[in-house]
Image (cartoon, helix red, strand yellow):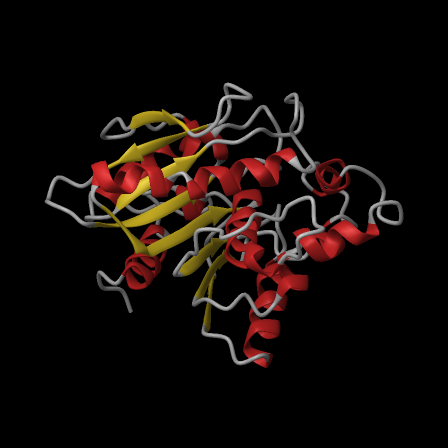
Length: 281
């Protein structure tokens, strides 16, 4: 198949994944608290990708549209744990439930590791769009103080983050006119001034330095998340001595980054495998 660029969401959503994973609940407050685990065919211990899907943090977009991506990464020899979570429109979604869910989902890998032969020292958080925001946040949640609604003692650490058009600056993104932009305030539970103390706890840019290797991939033709989101995060990380690389792909749009048939996929895959210690640039 000829590699594509400027892929539409529907093109990604209708791809049937090459393999099915194991659906596992990590909590029992909601039917949306589960993950889908895929294991490579070769013996472990397996490096792990914790995959966070996007969709504006909204209930109507679930993890199904990244299933083909998860299968493609697993086929390269990495275990993939695709975390579902409560979103806006679900009972308990938003603040603090969405954040608590992805934290619980990641930490549940400790329970899975002994029987699934997972290498918890090489977890790479990979997220797209709103999921990129959550992946970046997971890498920095250890910096939260005990008084935070999002604080968890002894959080499971990630070894690196691959942010795919991730929303890194919630304050700036909330000023945009798009549907996703309008989801920031509901995600944080109110208007900016009323919940001002939540931005430093939830916005990756305000948690810099993240303290882990960061690989950022963004399409220059992205009409949903401005490239400035990734550029600003990369600049802030570099200024603090962070290990960061930014790839702006000139022909890619927003959804190319999660489409295994797209031209952009080669770069995405290389960055994921690089941080997993299995190759890359």
